[in-house]
Amino acid sequence: MNQRDLLVIGGGPAGSAAAITAARAGLRVTMFEKGKYGRDKVCGDGLTPRAVAALEDLKIDLAPAHRIDGLRMIAGNKVRELAWPTTDRFPNHGAVWPRHRFDTHLVDVAIDAGAEVRFETEALPATENGRVTGVVAGGESFTAPLTILAAGAQGAAAKIVGCERDPDEPFGLAIRAYAPTPRHAERHLEACLSLRDEHGTPVPGYGWMFPAGDGTVNIGVGALSTMKGFRKLNLNTLLDQYASIVREPWGLGEYLDKPRAWRLPMSSVRRHGAGWLAVGDAAGFVNPMNGEGIDYGLESGMLAVERLLDNPATAPADYDRLVGERFDSFLRTGRRFSFLIGHPWLLRTGLRIAVGTQTTADITLAVMGNLVDSTTPGAAGRVLRVADGALRLVDPLLRRTRAAA
Image 1 (cartoon, rainbow, N blue to C red):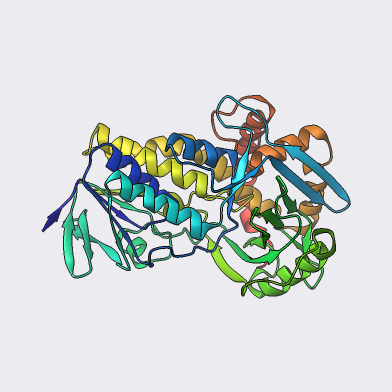
Image 2 (image 1 turned 45 degrees about the vertical axis):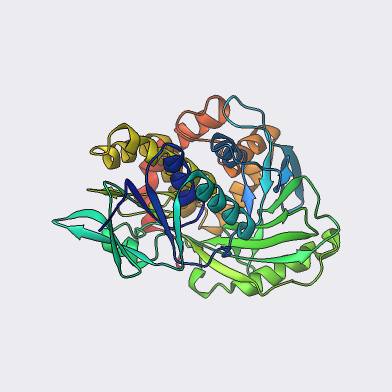
């Protein structure tokens, strides 16, 4: 048997954040990554100011990333270019860092900190009397007081412990490609909130242009499962339509690679149990209103290890309570809101409000930047609390009358 203090399944940002924190604290930690060293992860590559704050907490050098100072929001003919706000909690800048470089950088930091990382190795939770006692990986058995699941919500590991996506909750689909552009060094992300499919149906989602600072832009589109005709939605067609809109203003070249799509889990049936807990995407920590989850992954990975260091016996339950206090209200409101904007006429009305005034645009910016949670002060925090209460009351009606997918 291979005894460890911590086992981590998955080598993305959430898993690496946990491994880095554990290794720096002197724990014996092994992280298992099913992909090869330097593997790519399909993503928009954007890092919010919240993500930058988490990386700074991890003492990660952001020099390789392209700095982003704000967000340009487009809804119909309305364009608002806003700077990331300065707050006591988060810096006033984000970044774009392509995932094949970003994830590898974090893994390297984990290894340098003393974590053992096993690539091209699928690890599955081992259970005994309803408790996860470790993992089985590469023909070997490993044991630890805690196993962290950081491998997303669709894999075999998630099924074993029951932290799959809740089928009654919304999810997202997105697709991205890279293309050359002379505007690659811009300091603003761009988000087009008024997408339509090939039939003219408004799409609850957005198209993005995320300049990478390396001669390219990450171009993509995403949509929520609450829209009418979601099952028939052709993401490649939607991306091509969006590319035709931005091609001239961005001087956009042809795609440098084949567009790649992925699913965005936004819920989890369970996120902890005896001997295990889930972080990042595996726990459903994805903002339904922008598809972003890197910042939540980093935060939850660090928080999980902090609870382990405090008390291994109560770590899963303590972790679940704390992430619930930090994330649940905002993410729950986002999921309920997604049912609302699944109705086209409500979506159109919502978009006019979202960018209609400076005040509402600032709130939209805070939502799109993951800068809002249960402790947020000011207008954005008040709006969240009011929206959470109002949507809680109408949630049963929204689900019954959801647009036919």
